[in-house]
Every structure is written in C-alpha cells, then in structure tokens.
Image (cartoon, rainbow, N blue to C red; front, side, top):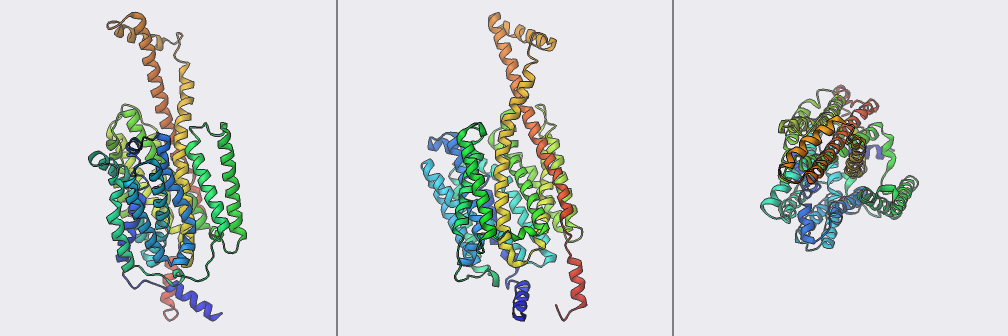
Length: 533
C-alpha cells in the first residue's frame, strides 16, 4: 500500500529535466503543420481536381480521407504510446506525416493522392493528443494557463492561416508545394523532439500490452461510414436515398458496439471512466461545439464572399486574417488573466463573443464593405482565443497526469467528429435554406404584385432598346428570377450564421457544471506544510 502511494507521488511530482519552454518549440512546430494541413488544401481543391481529371465529389475525398484516418488513430494513441513509448510514437507520427506529405506532392492520380492522405492522417492523428498531454504535464499548474495559450494559438491560428497560405502558394507556385513545405519543418520537429523530449514514468514503453482489436474494428467501421454519410448525404438527398439509410444504420450499430466494448472490455482501446469527471465531460462538449463552429465558419464565409460578392480565392482567404489578429489578442489576454481570474468567466466571455459575431454575420447584405466582414471576424477570433484555451485547462485540470494521454485522445476524437459534422451540416443548411426561401419568395413574382409589375416594366423598357419586345420581356423575367435566387441564397447564409451564433449561447449554461480549479488552496496547504510538500 505504501509502495503504491510512493509511486503515485512520484508520478504526480514528475517534471522534465529540460526547460519546458524549450520543449515547446518542436511540439508546437509539429502541431502547427498538422493543423495547418486540415484547411490549407481547401482553396487548392479545384486545382488538384483538374490535375487528376477528377470530379468535385471525387476530390472531396482528398480532404475527408485525412480526417477519417486521423480519427481512427486518435483513440489508439494511448495504446501505441505504451507499445513504443510515448516519445518514440510521437516521433514516428511526425516522420510518417512528413513522408506522407512528400508523397502527396508527388501524386499523379486521385487514387495515389487519397492513399497518401490516409497515411498523412495516420501520422497526424497522434500529434495533437500527445502534444496536448505533453504541454499539460510539463508545466506547473500555475503556468499551465500560459502554456495552453501557446498551444491554443497553434490550434486556432493554423486553420485560419491555412486558406490564405494555400491560396498564395497555389497562385504563385503550384499546389504540390502546399505539401512539400511540410517536409523540412517535419524533419526539424522530429530531430528536436528526439533531443529534447522525455517520457514520464507512466508514459514509458511497457511490456505485454494488448490492443483491443474488436474495439478498433468497431471504431474504424463507425468513423468510415459516418464520414461517408456526412460527405455524400447532401448530394444523395440524405435519408431519401436507400444506401444512405443503410450506411447510417451500420454507422449507428458500429458506434453502439464500440462504446459497449469499451465499457465491458477490461483492456479497452480508450478508458471511458474519464467521463465521470464533470469538468472533462462538460468541457469536451463545449470544445466540440467550438470546433464545429470554427470549421463551419471557415467553410461558409469564403464561400459567401466568392459566390455572392465576387472575391477571388486568395482574397476570400485573406479576409480570415482579422480573425487571426483577434485570436492573438485573446491569447495575450488569456496568458495574462488565466491565473488571476476564474477561467470559467473567460470561457463565457469567449462563447458570448463567438455567438455575437455569428449574429453580426447574420446581418450581412450585398452592399457591405470590407469592415463589415473584418470587425465580426476579429471578435470571433477573440472569442475563439478566450474560450478555447481556458476550456482545455478546465476540462483536464481535475484529471491525474497518467490519465492525460487517454483523455486528450478521446477529446480530440470527438473534436475531429465535431469538425466533420459542422462542415457537413453547414453545406446542407445552405442548400436547404436556399430552397425554403426560394419557395417562400417565388410567390411574389406574379402579376398581382405592383412592385413586380413596375420592376418588369422598367427592365423590359431598358432592354427593348437592344432587342425585340418579346425577347426583352423574357430577359427581364430571367433577370428578376436570378435576383430572387441570389436573395434566397443570401438568406441561407444569414440563417446559417445566426444558428451557429445561437448554438454558442446555448452551451454557456454547461459552465455551471464545471468546478473551479483549487490552485490557490493547494498553494496555501504547501506553505503550511513545507515538510510534506
């Protein structure tokens, strides 16, 4: 009993011999290139499809195969860390990601590209949860707020910078360089990790480790079928298609079997007991919502600017820069305030800013200036920064260090699914809301509406000077119907922005379930009992 207690104290008191801030450099370099690749290829997708003579639907697998592969590996991170040792597995993940990036740039057809992206996802899947665990464990609780601010800066800024950098590289070089730029940074990160990182006692290589093969199979089937439904559902008219219903049914059954196996199997792939912790459960739900809103907004805003406002791919990506500045501002504020005020207040403030920015985007029209986009984007970035880092701290603060790798793996799996759902959901919302508004507005285009008659007469009169009267009338009707379609699409964007804003406000009450960190109390106890500490 005494021996177990001493071992527990050693685990809790472990600290790296290397300065943690030096360790941050290779860890954050790996995090940045991994997260960046989630969005950097979005603007180059048409160029890739053209190079491979692929349709747009086929080219979407270039993005989704990456998410599927990463999602499969994330829950198995704890197992692979025990088999290889966490440091070794982290380096293997970086090297596999780097090699796969080079293969992506060398791809000559869509099949090889998808294969390379799957390898890239397998490599990248282990980077984020291990990095998060390293950042949490290596710093004292008093410094975790600042450390997670640095981590959050990479996680939040990378997907925002991705479309801008991807557009610039594609326009000025060629799309393969989107992947080639990962190679030198990946090699540097792997070398520095080998020299600087250390494994805690509970993260070293272990013997006789068994994998939950049944759980891994259920997980793979669940994620592959779910991603297929999310990708193809909108084009197939969702559950009106028989194959979508069957695929979704298989996904639901596999999901139930996976969680059942994790509860009943003693050597499960993931340890679901962390969900007994209120902070972890509530914090994970909030992070999934934030992640879904982040990736959905990154998909919807450039699309709005390109399709409705006539922006180029690079300019639409460039409009994300104010969001990056807002995130950086919030990171500085978080690093300064996280140890001085209750982090729950920062999360509430951040979610309120994201929700307010969503409602502000919901007030857009087609006569806006750049400032109408820049200001809400800045505040949305501030909201992301103020909420993301404190909620990471709060969700993991009440867990033990030896639970971190498993907990961050589960958390990142669910965030990955949240990103996919958010991206797919917003595409469906745009299509369906546009149809609804078009149906509601088309009834106004009739001869009993004096506004419609006046507009028809003025447009027909203007066009009659260039063509026959009957042709002018047809062109006038076509012009007004085109305006109706444009306005209905605008309303679809507005509704989508508003819904995502409202969702952020709806998750704020979850903060009431989270406990306040007891850092101050621990400090007092240590001062009163210096011998015990």
